[in-house]
Length: 225
Image (cartoon, rainbow, N blue to C red; front, side, top):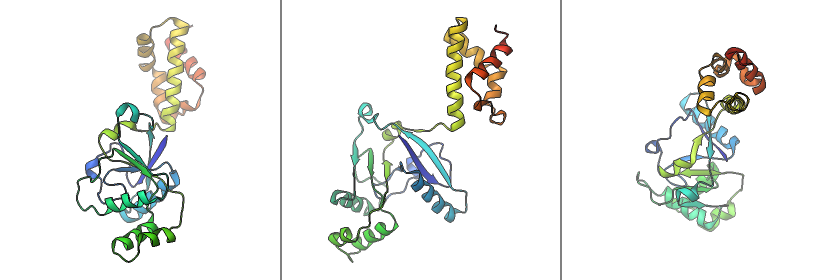
């Protein structure tokens, strides 16, 4: 599943030490499956920092938790349990995590909801009043709370990287099938070729061509009949 993080910085590496405490699901790296939500967050952050808004795309392997033995908590909606958990985390004023979950997923306490939560914490409204005044809107967030949880999150390949990846796979397979090369020889000839260098250069726009066209160029360069 693709998830997005909105900020004013392209995320290359996640550092949980830089994450803030006292948030909805505790201290951790937050992302969402709703790209528009991430874009809104990026705009908000950039207005404050005066930098360019940036949305970083990740691949979240939502089934890997079985192999990684992760402890996960999921809230499907704004429920009593969600409310109590958010209050529990927002009350925390220390850097230490106050729960032992690796990943927590559920709806967001947006601006209006966050204000109502603050009202509750200050004792000006009750829990019942909070839910009676609650206005539902589509929202989603995933908090990766531990270093272990980051094993199921990886930077998504960009469109160009993805296109080149598929061209690479087809060409390597063709070299092995058409010319009886083993994988090592095919890999060496392809990745050291001028054709590959041109393909990897975004400005040539060769990644927009079919793998068959790139394969013909490679065979001409290597003088393969």
